[in-house]
Image (tube, rainbow, N blue to C red; front, side, top):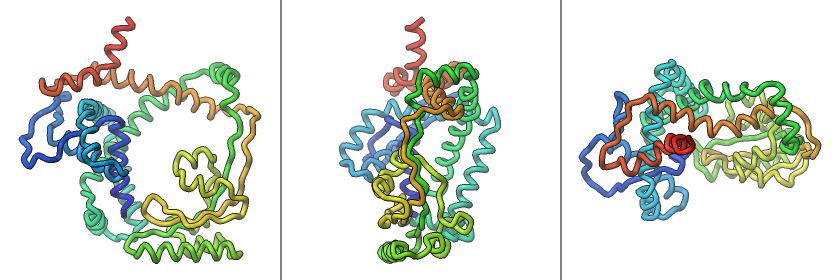
Length: 352
């Protein structure tokens, strides 16, 4: 269940990006309204809670606590600006009905965790989370906000920007950027995954070593996966993972990328820690070398155009939400927040 702690803290860090936060040393906090966003408010206690989560995440990643607190305090204005933008997204999601879809997704995620760890009731899952220092309601709230953001951006921005270029524009972009569209190195892997949940980690690691040794000695990897792997769909996949670009593996998990980098077809990795929740053993099933030859793939070209255009369009989208909203930041925090929150609007006025 360590994943729950890490995922919770990591997701908060990703969302707040470079923004972060305040002292935890005060024994008593007199709450106050930091900002009003239409009919909702952002309180000082909420800001401090978010700040503490970021500090905890920095410390967990090896940063000195005093230095983490100092960095967070210096970027308090960015955090508050991020929370205001978050409120605007949540309010917009309610207007278009996405908040209900997000709640369904959150419920599905909790159900998936229950199945993965063989927990029969939601109460049992909550107890397991609390035993790891995770507040279930905080987790639910964080996942709900995350789902709302992703669904809203997908619906109101990504899908539109993806289909925006005409067929001619797509072709022209490809001709001007052929170097981007070469065939990447592809790997097909199979995996045996063993979870730590409720078990002695040393025993789990030892079992993984034994399974890796059996596989190297000639045992059927697919059969070993079906009999031992704890992925929920292993009976169907037999441990096989869809082909993936080597670059994507490097971005997603450098440890796995390093382990498979020089392996040939049929080679087996040593057991690797997987997201702090278990151990995985991988086999390289297929390996296709990269090519310098360019090839046209409309989907890949549209995705490249999307990646280029989306950041600016997101800024425009948020500026439009702010423009149509009532936002009032308290006098205490306005000098910290306004230059960050309304940077896009000021840029547009200057350019005009």
